[in-house]
Image (cartoon, rainbow, N blue to C red):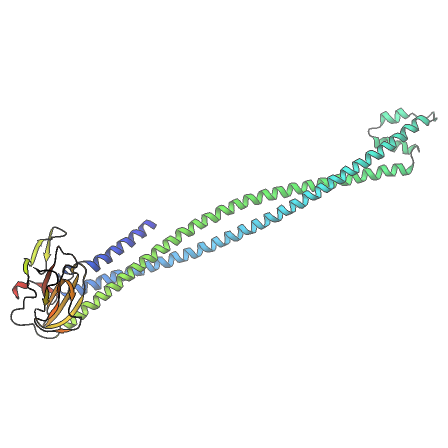
Length: 389
């Protein structure tokens, strides 16, 4: 799609170039009325293309706006996930601190418990040595108990341990159990937070991928929009050039509605040698057979050029392949054209007399050397000048 749009721009620019810089022989090959109709048709075609391009521009603009909205949404989602991930990481850090604290508490409780166990072990040993109760079998209590705590419990039941000693052991045991429970809760919480962190990281990767995909689509749509706008600009420039040419031809047609055609022979416009006549010929620059709509009169650069008859200068400008050129209207639809000049001695709108200096020989435009290209036109159509000189 992008390549096709670029190709359209290139074609549009090429058409403008051809229209603006093509030799005037193409423009004056038929009557001015025919040229005006052709320009109107080209303007209609150009306007249709402009309307089509404006529709494309509107469509691409809507697409760009839509994709920009999607990109903003994906960026918001990505920011939300990153913020949530930072919170989870912070909570994990706090949980790790709590877990470390509980681990230290457990170490201290175990240390305290071991100290109390050592004291009670000594007391149990003393009970064994000092016991005179024949009904008491210390080894039976010892070997039938599954834990040290059970030994202490049985000894307490046998009133062989003080209540205070048993209470200390029981408190330490309960405290240790509570710490173990909290420690396990913290471990479970940390595991859950690690899983949440892992899931968030996966979602962030997916969100990054989506953001990149949407960004690529936005670049593509923006490029299409820019290409379409370039096409539109080229077409508008073409339309402006066509309008200008249309007005120019209309102005010339208006000027051709007054006066009478000159009678008698025209004045030779320059003291030069006839090097190329009117009609089909081999083009000296582009080759091939082409219509030559005037005659060429070779003369040194700067040689004066004179008006072939009196009239109004209705064109005095640079005209593509013809270079600097002058068009003089003499009346009754009769005009003369002078091309490849090096300079002007008159200006547009000026009235000139027969034989008046109007310019100088040159080689502007498409030429192989200094000469005057001279044409006679009746109602815009080129005629053989030799029939009027």
